[in-house]
Image (cartoon, rainbow over all chains, first blue to last red; front, side, top):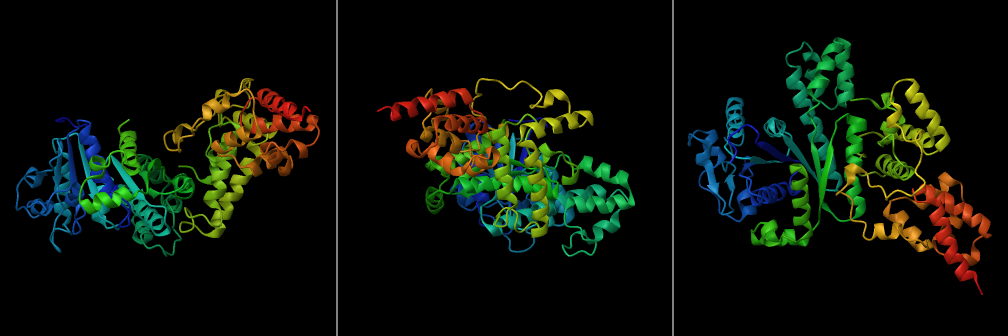
Length: 300
Length: 206
């Protein structure tokens, strides 16, 4: 068990629903737990939580929503056993409204408490979309994992997610400087200043103060999302990951690592139907191998 | 975080300054795919015009780096302008005579599909056209690129890979083609030439 500060938070996002985020994060957490790491899996898909199903357990009574609304005092009280040694689950809120949209103060308390959990790894499953709640979970992590499938809609949403995450982080950093006027319009893709990429944003800020650009660029050095390509069928699909990485660097100026890929596999569908974890029931399947090797590459 | 206009040719092509010719070919191939008209990875991110501009810079970088002489001159320019130190450059160092092991970019290790049997193929003493084709494909190099770089007619390259001895030109030409083909794949030119011609002679002996 990790009682120090060297625990790691992995947050899994992707902007789009139905691309395998929950399945991947659930199985990655099992891979880590099987290696003797103490792991907590958090379902932060507030409003659409279903990680418990991926782990093959019934809907837990206590959820993250209970902690957010203070029905339970400690976050550990919202954690349930999964039947898998070393792996605990904090299930997502089930309320239609309320906990799905926590207030800013509730979110700050939640993020701080998550960081203080007494474990080695905290894996967070994010919902779809680019709301500030989702982005803040992504940005608080040590490793932000971006799941993409080789389809136009998923790729399009992934870029949107990346741009929004970048803007959210750089916006937070810039709050202490006098460049607010640039950020007032930047979230509008049709903004009149023509800001479409981080490069454009920094050009615009440099018109006000070049030193601020240097400070912001330094502050953004740690922003390095990790790409996982899911449901690949061909070598060309695998190459799309390299292309996305290249476009991010050359066009957006965002450094990204291509962590790995997971093959499309009918056994995934079967494991979901059976409500059983893929890496336990089908450990030798192509998809399970992909999940295992991507998790391991992050451990190195 | 450098804009494309501020990057050197190696950064533009996303290769190490010590990259082999195969790595340069492969990087260019990926870049053409990434910024091409039908690219799934970039169609929603940038306009056609932006893609054309990036591609044009990439082609400029490729033209310089794929040619040994122009690459040497460019490396000297990078050193002179203190953009890079001499030990980081490949073209100014002695190129090993022995063919190196088939290179796999560090960052792609474990990501690329396994190249079954590639090491045993690379170690072969006799190189049939089929073996050469297999090595080329496993290295992800397109035959058109070899034709473009070497200026050898692609038909001759195909005939070499098909072991179609009857339609190939005189041995003296084939030997020249084989040396250039091998250089593109970072294989030993001598071994490939001798290995291929051994099979050629056996087949042509009545």
